Amino acid sequence: MNPQRLEGLVRDIFVAAGMSAEHARLVAEVLVWADLRGMGSHGVMRVPRYVDLIRAGDLNPNPVMTTRNETAACVLLEADRAAGPVAMTHATQLALSKAKEAGAGICLVRATTHTAALGYYTHMAANAGMAAIAFSGSWPNMAYTALALQACRLPRLPSRYPAKVRRSHSTWHRALFRWASSCRRAAPAKSWSPGWRSTRTETQRRILAQPQCRCLWAAQRAPAWHY
Image (cartoon, rainbow, N blue to C red; front, side, top):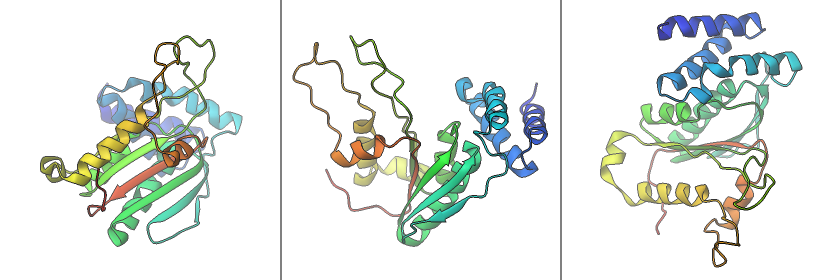
């Protein structure tokens, strides 16, 4: 099946489940995009699960999203249990709008559902000529080595930069990767690494510990970060 036909099929399924045509088109586009990039775990195999969430009342097919706590560079999006691609696409647009005005923009998203492929949203920023990092929180779903219970989670931190920024290897470009790498480290068991210390800052720890937290960070100009 070619991608366009598959996207149309997925769109029709979500329309039948109660989504508006525009939201259904957007969700279908993001899911098919993931499959085309080899990320089947976040592709159209998610369709039955999304439909189940709608039927259970956990996913709102017709959300009324609002913003609050807005500043020059930050905004909180109340997603009203919107489908992840619907909420995150809107969050990306808000973050990019903030970045255009303030140089950097952050949008936090609350009360959304499965975000789908986060890389889709960072690609949106790169296509707009900006750098971006997106991350999400979730319940603990992994166990440290030698533990029998789930005690941690592996945050996904996709980032994307315009080609001219990737070539420059500027200080702020390296700083973003360094921060993202530090967030990805998960603490190993003390039994085999007694001297290990987390490199996350307390701020990073607080951010990543928040359940149902989604963030889209975008920057237009180089922030004054050094390391």
